[in-house]
Every structure is written in structure tokens, then in C-alpha cells.
Amino acid sequence: MLHESVTPERISSAQALIRPHIRRTPVMQVDLGDFGGPALPVALKLELLQHSGSFRPAAPLPAS
Image (cartoon, rainbow, N blue to C red):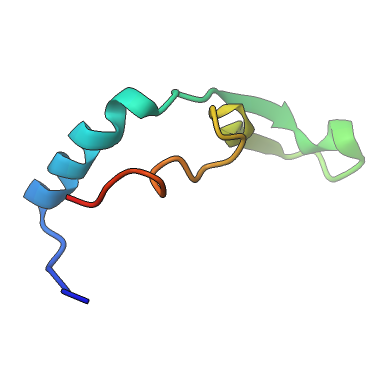
């Protein structure tokens, strides 16, 4: 297995490769007190709305 350094350029390249396959998911602000916890603001990132149903869409894409 070849180990290559992670560089800003490689990150940008990977982003360009997977961008068309990723759905932007919303962030929902809620109060934990509404769910029986202490009254604290909580941000929920709704990754379950990805096409795959989870935050794993990059796995089947080819490595660059």
C-alpha cells in the first residue's frame, strides 16, 4: 500500500472528485430540553439525508 502525504492540493482534488456525488445536508438547531435533557442548544447535522443514508458516500468512489 502506497502512503502519500495529505496536502491541501490532494484535499482539493478529492473534493472536486466527490462533490457531484454529495448532497448538502441541513443543520437543525434544537433545544435539548425538548427531549427531556437540560435546556441547552444543540446543533444536529442531518447526515442521514445523504443518498446512501449515512455519511459514507466517498467509500465507493475510486481513489485518485
